[in-house]
Length: 361
Image (cartoon, rainbow, N blue to C red):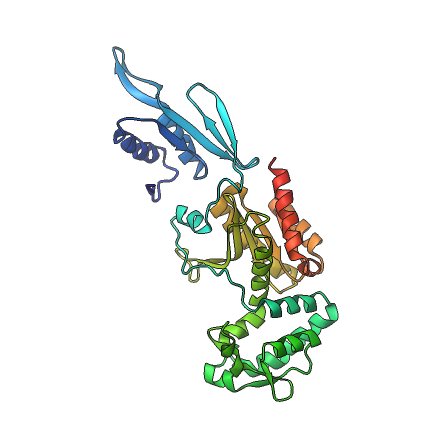
């Protein structure tokens, strides 16, 4: 595969035709195929025009005629079909099924000239503890108890005044009381052998788990990253049954002109279709909407109209949140999963996939 950049001329008709015409001159025999899926409207229109007609010289001067040996194709995003237009004006429709074609996520990003900062994660960290946290977040009283402990006890001990985490040496010395934690979390921490000295969380024991490279990573995990790992573990449960061959979290994508680039929290492909999931333990509508909007815009940019986007959050009103967002975007193909959906998240993701299949038949 050869990629030719149009640089800043992606909407310049003359430049598009010039680039394609130059490539045509290097092809001496055989058939030529043009897939004009994606890109700008100008790219599609003028690449099609350049290949469809060829310039010849006859007695009257320059004339144009239909070029021989050209096959045109494009993806129908509504039906997930490859449409092929042949020289005999016949159109062939090929259903693109997940069991016949799998496009890796990395390939999708590379088609846009983007490379990931690092390989995405496919192994969930401490899924058992994440499962217990999900149970807590399904109970309003317990989730209040969790946040009270996390912000007023854990963060007070583990963070500096500027809200950054303390250094490794200082963190390793901490013994943080867990008396005010929900019993499920206390039991899970005890199972991980992180509790010593009469129910105190010993951060110095974290690295012995062999899960987190640094104590700070565990702190960040408790801060909300645990939800991403829970979602990843739920995806793994249904990967085989739903034909999900490529999935993971932490898809960090550098973008020119930005400091940190962009990151898909969790993503997977099904066939060539991109599914992006944004995760937040927040319940505030403004923050939830911001997370979903950003994921939606990037997913459409990377995966086209076929891309699907979901938000996994801790809202108790996911339906009204979804209604507000879909009304703004005029897009009904967005899913929002709230607190009540978390315990059966894998089943809810299957329903989302099935609904998507129904829409594309």
